[in-house]
Length: 320
Image (cartoon, rainbow, N blue to C red; front, top):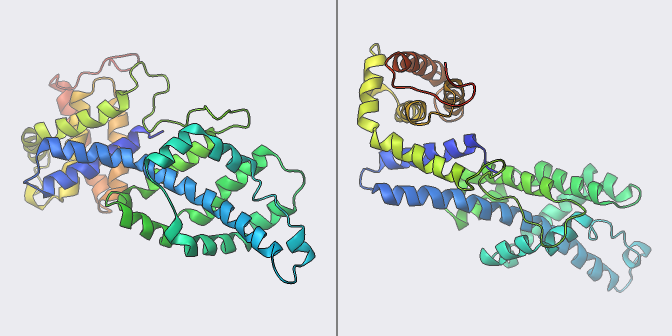
């Protein structure tokens, strides 16, 4: 599921934590990074399970309404389209989902209030109203509803994010990555799947001979940026001669070190890909001026290092 950009983000976060904490051992820092990455999946399952809890709450509300002293016709003959959602039924039957939910010990017992509020918000939303009044129920429509409920009502939900931050120190920074995983998981489930169908794995394995290729890439990039940190700093100082190195922000220095590590140590990754990805990270995580600065320095360093034979790319379309 996670793309290489997502993995670069995890490396960037881990490098930042490493360089501001001089006492941490490399092995501990690596362990923290991989655990943080793996807990993204846990957060994604939490998000999915919350949607299931909303459906369960709706079913509970229907049963309670039937027991009123003076139930209305709607109470006695409710529209059960939402509680009978075919996608949710497929998800909750999935053995992989159930295994992970149990493994993570997920429960929402102490959070009925937020479930109730989200359900009420959903009922007032046109997404829900249009769905409930539409024609015959089918799996794809049910799946699209859940996807839209998640992206429109649950993403950026401050109450949910507060709960997640209380559960893990990692999740404050990883909610966007987890949300991406939720969308991928929802999209992967099809009507014809049986209960044994596997959910997507955290690391992308499609078309890869080694299922650990992406995880190993993340770890190796992290290691190389640290192990060659001093030599990379020297390179940066040389190429940024118009800048006082000590005045370059730590985030920019880390981004440059990541870029150098990938340019030099990963011969199958094109130079342009590395440059573009580091610049994109600068846009997301550094100052407004950093993009131009990093682009200029990395571009100059990559040209010089290629001329010196220190950047050598191999593979189809990479040999210049």
